[in-house]
Image (cartoon, rainbow, N blue to C red):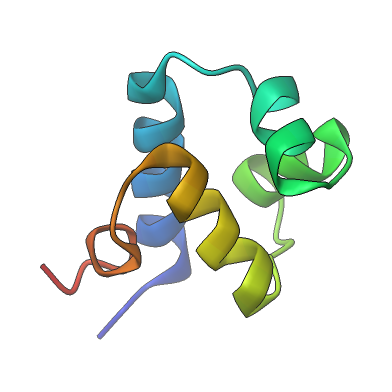
Length: 69
């Protein structure tokens, strides 16, 4: 089963490895920087299109973040 906490952990790792700040990611995706923080630290989850855009900005596959690869 896919666990949201594992997804958040992988997303945090990918953001850290990207070398981009949460502010840079937010600007590229078109969301508020505090929203990126909430996705990573709270039980707030991005809409599917926002999630896809974050993955695109990070240059990663959504499958990787979801734990499907």
